[in-house]
Image (cartoon, rainbow, N blue to C red; front, side, top):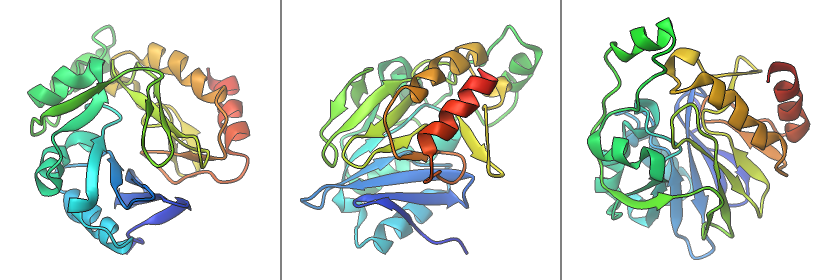
Length: 236
């Protein structure tokens, strides 16, 4: 069994909800309040609650839930976590807010054959949830000393990455995967615009951070920024 949490920095933990393949994150403020980032698939809340317990927290300690984007492997457990925590709703970029409210992923890229085929497959829906706050590029959220919203569209219209400025932890979201110990792009078939995803991800090479954390795959702790920049340079 994988560990229920992996500590990235003081007050920042990764919660694997499907081994390292799908991750949620928790940020703990000095006053004990918790911000949760992403809620995994529909069955993920049990693992999230177990992860919270491992750091001495309960769902009632969660006062904010942020989603990086409106796909079922990140939003599938969101409605259940809203109910368990009692928060007013979810925080998500304004361009993905309507999809969360409707319980359906954004459209895939219809200019590609794979995108058209994927749009017909089951699994694009999830339980709809209330949106509490619509986020915007450059927002600095009062989360554990400051969490910067970086709009990295393409995977979905409102996809975001998140930079925790006090600890230098960057959550890339699905802009970049880290699977089998290798950085890679998400599947083009599941992107709203794969081309835009590749373009916007270059912002991640310009930010300052110590640890690169991924919603798909384990984190990079050594030479994280240089590794990400090297990937973008070779694969941009």
